[in-house]
Length: 194
Image 1 (cartoon, rainbow, N blue to C red):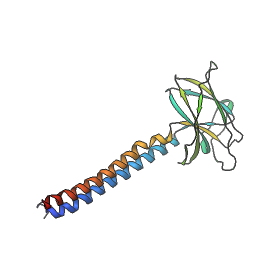
Image 2 (cartoon, one colour):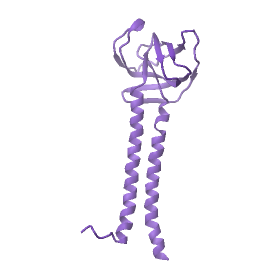
Image 3 (cartoon, one colour):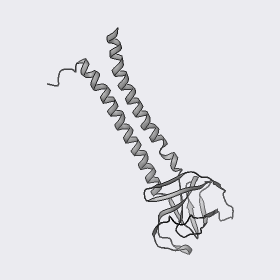
Image 4 (cartoon, helix red, strand yellow):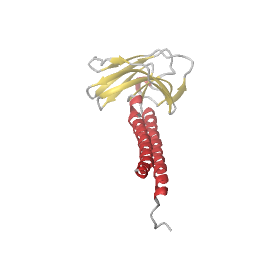
């Protein structure tokens, strides 16, 4: 029953449809993979409480983005800033945050102000405060002050960059599927006209 090759008209109908479906499935998969990557990055950011001087061990130097979170879940902290794990969702008070990063020598890498990027997903809500470049592995003291205890600092990657590659791949997959569908539909007709 299926041993006979498909006739040309059937191929002309099936190939374009198959191309669009495959392109669409790939595009959806890539888009979702990008969104999952962003959610995972947000959930695994390093979070620091406000009103504390927290020792931070950086083992892998690089560029870190600093976000002020008004919806967050903080782990338990020990030491001079001991507190139990807690969650908060602060919609009432706009946090006024000051932050400084100090080396044991007293030097402080500069924090460059940034704005515009924010997130509200994966159980967290944050707004970009700035970025800092840490050149060497070391133990830093992070000093964070705020006008409200219901805020936190999150350190991690630039969120907007994480999904760009996946979204571009999704768009390319969709366009490729549509182009293949168009070519497989138009070229046979041009041959018939000759």
